[in-house]
Length: 160
Image 1 (tube, one colour):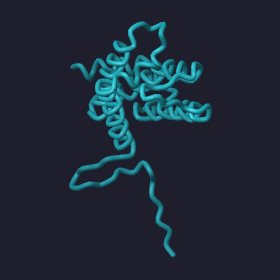
Image 2 (cartoon, helix red, strand yellow):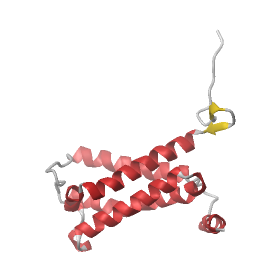
Image 3 (cartoon, one colour):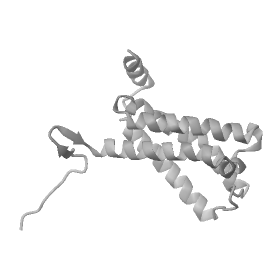
Image 4 (cartoon, one colour):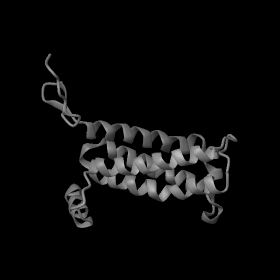
């Protein structure tokens, strides 16, 4: 019996010359998720408003502003030329947005529809947030030898 071995990172062949590897697939899926979440910030603003910590001021402003950023990051993840910087941007965005989730957890805050998470639900959400950050860094091609200067240099090349 012959054993078939496949490499998860091997390109997927779609047609003549079209190749897509798992990093590209996850980048597109992540981009679609961020775009969807960003649009939801505009179509159901009141659902997100309760979890904005009061110390930040106008909840509506922060919900709309984060929606804009999520859509931009999502588009960047889908566009191949901006994928690396968008991967880093999505990791940073997930870190920056976590205080709203933490506020929801600590204050036992309900979302706009009255739903709330159980303590286990909050732990699962935190694990998904950490997984999302790690996935974003993987999409960006981050490694321990890569410095912020490498990212800056690439950004300068994108703008040319």
